[in-house]
Length: 118
Length: 109
Image (tube, rainbow over all chains, first blue to last red; front, side):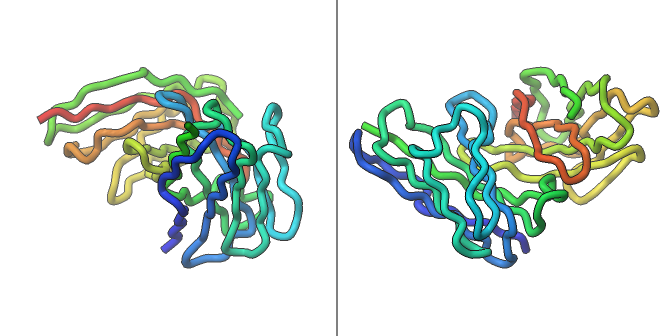
């Protein structure tokens, strides 16, 4: 149980285009979903936390207008990288928690999406 | 949440026990110790967590010192598939997980 999927697993796009990444909880309802970014040989950095039906909370330094997060249902969250540039090339990982604030340590991670912007 | 310190890398021979240390000298009484691992180009995988007592599951054992200032993750019979980055995280129940540098474990034949 507790499986989280991401789609696509990898994507290559041209600079200036937008890319949407989906994160789905397959066998549970995710009250909270998290988006992380990981550059090569570095650790995961939290980008934002989103609760179903409300606006995402972004970490300091993460541009909310560039990284649009939508958590419209209890099983789906999307991250859209708008006007992508080569420096946005990274490994994007989502995680999901069946519970809300107060249980953020119970997270199940997706397999990640590798974004390459040319 | 308390900061954790781990060696950046370790090697282990296949079939032998891998003992991964973690220092969390400033851990507070209500902070748990979590271990995750990340195999190359995959999302993190939960391994085990504990508060005070030693814990064991099908993947690993977690040994926490009596003063809780350090812990050791033990993979009893390491295989090549255990090659990964292992993250030790101290966090209060319910709090976000903050990933540090981790230990890159290389299991060698």
